[in-house]
View (cartoon, rainbow, N blue to C red):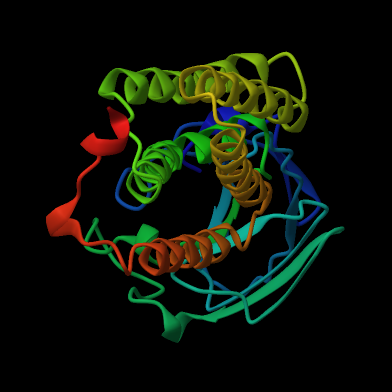
Length: 289
């Protein structure tokens, strides 16, 4: 056992109906570096069979791994945790994962690992054959915030790209200072999202801040350009982008797939609307004046 702090109760071993209490530490570091130990009586002639059992109460929420030191190691796990990740040297022979929990079973032979039943000194490392589960946390507020922040650069980039295409296609001029102010509004959105989601539900915080940021940018565009059509266009683009980010951060298993497909579609739309632009002869000065 790598982390002895996980032990919740005193561990007692029943060895041929004899109760033996474990002590901290290990008598030798040849096989493992940390753990607990208990002294048992063995028949020097090797003619006695032994039966034993123990109860181990553990706390923690990260991972649980096993090392197959027996000739046959059969492990069956059942839990109400709905988000397991099976890792290590061996994957389960059978597993079932549902919204109500999971069941998994491993059957590992001594022929499957790379160390024998008996050896001397520390010539073998048994940790390389460990296997088990990682208990993944479901998508919570902090993970949603982290996911949204990971898409921040992409989101701000697409927003600026939308402004640029509006500028080119409508032959209007948007000053760099106006780009900076809009970018600052988008950056502050993520800062407020992280702080407010600690006090409100994430989805509610996201919707409130998205609407507030959208109204702020739309009002600013309306004030500087005085064009209802342009304001509606920018608002529509931002609404699509915010909706896209909101859907992605809700997903757990298909976030990468949906995100990649969505970015591909957005790229296709950009290429479609820019297909007739003569990039060598852009001239915005005539209408900007």
